[in-house]
Image 1 (tube, rainbow, N blue to C red):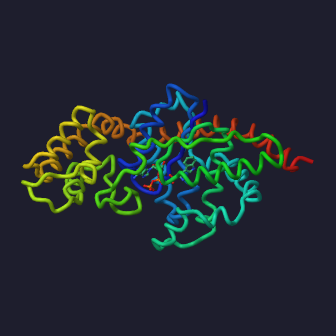
Image 2 (cartoon, rainbow, N blue to C red; image 1 turned 30 degrees about the horizontal axis):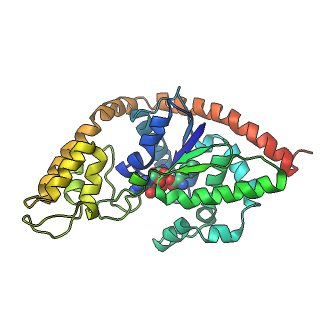
Image 3 (cartoon, helix red, strand yellow; image 1 turned 180 degrees about the horizontal axis):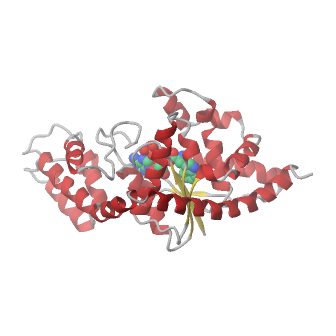
Length: 321
Ligand code: ADP
Ligand code: TRP
């Protein structure tokens, strides 16, 4: 089975990215044919600072490797290094209805937050469809926010297959309902662009600051608390096993729980959880050329798979003459 997903290098990676997508991708490397990439072309829709995008791209690759992605067990590359992504995108534009893109929640959401409504932002889902269809992916592990993008991808693949015969594999979204939308410190979806994220690799001081500002309700210490509607509980449970989660739930349901104490415990839990990865990352950041080499080798391997699909697409669409 082919499993594929990508992540935007639009800022530092956070625990929502980790639990929503990265952890499951790393798990798939030993039980599937895994394709994992850094989508720098997608990040261009919101970043127009060249050095910043270049830095974020290398950082995202470094983070993924530090967290356990093994380049010899999967295909790991940077999207912009494989030109077939943009070539297929152009072809797919011609099989994408305007209405499909006009209904995109993610586009509307970005515009409502003040992003410039440029064409790249509007066409974002078509590039994502090309990313997926190029590699004939069966399963795409993502968070809930990407569900509609997968539906758009399936729609475009269906149109092309209907017109030209079976060409693209129909991909399924792999969304873990338990981790579909991880809240940020303000209770909204955690996101790089909402300034509500707890980043994976930050200093302990910064971690303390972020965790201590997680928004909780105004219940007093002697009140019983509501774990199922508590942002702090939702973040804690990501790091706890079943027994530990049940124990914390018990504390919520008895008088006496202080949110401040739970937050202090959470700081230590997060800090310890990522400690081994922090050491690996520190070593990798000293060897940027090693990381670059891994990505370039990955692009070479991905390119071969992409070319196979493009040969079929070009000939079916009439681009070979
Ligand atoms: P961001 O919104 O922070 O820019 P991306 O769009 O780059 O994140 O998302 C990368 C992956 O991480 C996607 O699969 C996305 O669905 C997942 N993801 C991002 N934020 C969350 C979250 N808060 N909860 C669950 N998954 C998330
Ligand atoms: N749109 C995805 C996000 O914002 C990133 C992405 C680009 C992606 N291409 C992809 C995810 C292909 C899965 C498959 O998170």
